[in-house]
Length: 224
Image: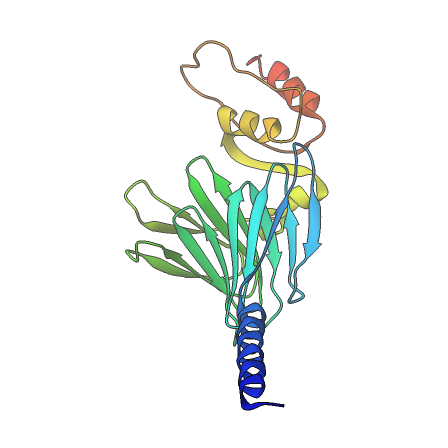
């Protein structure tokens, strides 16, 4: 072979190696979503498992150094495969939740993201950097109107992922919140007509597919 041919071959190999390196280390991206009333589970590339609730959507972006998930809509339960060298982060609204190996739930509510821990610990941080918190088992965090993270203890931690068995658990919840939750799952929508001077609150466990049971409760309480 001539020197020019050898040089040309070497240049082609160099370009091929560059493209191979780019493809090897670029972030892998995938999108998962559910429709009204649907719930699905997905095993991610690293062995972590995500359970998506009704009308939910996530975007997964993995590279060799990190694992990132964007919760774009709805609610998701994450069972994270341990890997201290590749932190697992969930971005939801203006909040980032960081975990190494744990089980936690993230719900994008109308008021902002809500994070609850079932196993292990997570670090919850505002993207603005103004506030952060460490959550343990049975603890919940949400953002306040003032741009802070508010943490609370959950009286019954076993109810955090009750939605996986298609149950809605309410503890002194306002009527509008309960109606909103039922409407997330059902084609038949409940509507509140007129104004309510003193909004009633209710406690109970209901099947997401049986809004009639809740409507019967309303009737019995003389609200409906």
